[in-house]
Length: 185
Image: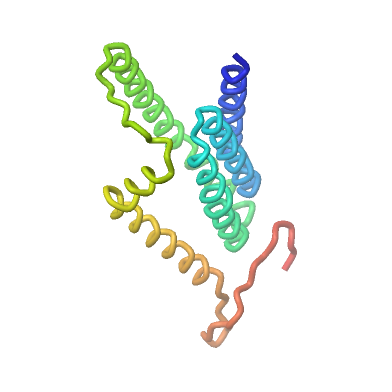
């Protein structure tokens, strides 16, 4: 009974934080809200007795990818006026995409609910075991796993290249300059 209420609370907080991610004007606050969403999802995984997935959620998404996002946001340091222009320009497109994704989610959820009621949805055995997850990850899903690692590597290299400042004579500085929020220079 308490698990059900906790599940509702964590899900509600995840939705509120996801909305906060979308409506925030400051990208650092938006990234912080997204970190909150990832933590609420990890809490839901714990309630579903999927502790391994919850730990991976926190380690990979909150610990690595979100730190990379915050690093890139601070590295690029888009000026406030440019952010405002981009914020309002993409709003209509974002609403259209959001409504389309919501409709798709409702359609898939309804079809899954029908399959569950009819008993047509097979559930794999021992899926909560770390050994089974590792077996599937490094056998059936090795290509997507490696593609994601290459994409993340390209993102890190791109962030470093964008962070390098050019000198007036065209030479590159050796150090990477990182501007913090609120810095004047």
